Length: 420
Ligand SMILES: NC(=O)c1ccc[n+]([C@@H]2O[C@H](COP(=O)([O-])OP(=O)(O)OC[C@H]3O[C@@H](n4cnc5c(N)ncnc54)[C@H](O)[C@@H]3O)[C@@H](O)[C@H]2O)c1
Image 1 (spheres, helix red, strand yellow):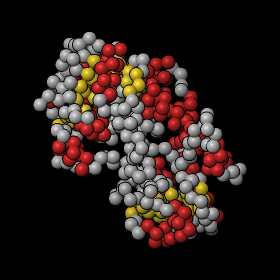
Image 2 (tube, protein in one colour):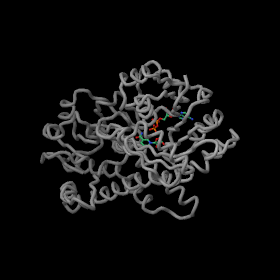
Image 3 (cartoon, protein in one colour):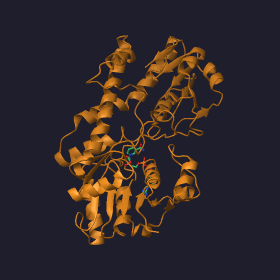
Image 4 (spheres, helix red, strand yellow):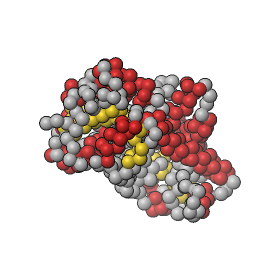
């Protein structure tokens, strides 16, 4: 059977995309270098939060299949690359997965194919990194013999309102014809397609979105510190400011930023500006600095709360509620809970955690005990810190039964809670 699209990288981004394309009636092949992921998908098991085993079964029923064999890419009408773009040791872009996936496509590129990069990356990657690999290995020319585009992934795991099909999709082609072809492709299963001028504009649009969030979160995180000192309730301030129907969007402070989009992606832009132009992207660097210090700030506030109660942190029992980076999902990437636990552990706190989404939590340098009986653990701890507000938590009730309850998410109304 001919394949309509091969999706390379079957993670948080690639798998929901494969699902939407399958639902639209396309024949979808998934390609991943991780044999365990491929095997588990082929046996009907999902490994991402947004898709259930039933969803995978439906996809398989509609013809989806996963493989580790790159030669199966040959003959597909389109290839979409959704592989990770982490940071290297020197905090610069690590494009090894993008290069690896591009090489897999390049070795199997045929005339007329559409190749799209979705991984978040710095401006110029599609044109300067992906295109030369494809052209060199195949002897074909982008824009003439095959189509090439960048389309940033905007998926928000756990978002019940916006999924792959109703989040507008930006596309930027190597040529206008490439944009058109990519727009037609996504138009089959995504409600709105927005055409950017070219690949660089589409790449930068994604980084602008992430940098915007990063900076605005840093703004309220910085304000959280001085508002606390000045005895101003920042949560109430934000609530009041957000009543303005135009020109303001609410962002909230927290114990630090996690996931990929906020702590990692803006580095791709600032690193690129510095490497290409020699000067810093100061907003990003400042936001990075402020957001990165939040776990230490929360640990410091926790220490003060214990101190106010005549307790030393050394030997105090501290219970962390919610250790994932976002509410209601299991994703722990870059979760600030790790650094918070390490800081409190270094101060001698006896740590435990509760998280309905995390059955095992192993972090270096500190032992953290898992608790299952939430209410009795909350009542027994010297200090409870709400790190992530999962829907299972009735924070006001927990604040009532805890000896001391530190709410880093601003969700409690109870006078008994201390808010960030
Ligand atoms: N997760 C999100 O919420 C999100 C949102 C927007 C954008 N993004 C971006 O999308 C990209 C993918 O992120 P993700 O969250 O899906 O990652 P992920 O880690 O969930 O999945 C990536 C998959 O790619 C596979 N892979 C690695 N190298 C490969 C290769 N050479 N060939 C084929 N497969 C390979 C891995 O085995 C893994 O299964 C990243 O650039 C990320 O920044 C992620």
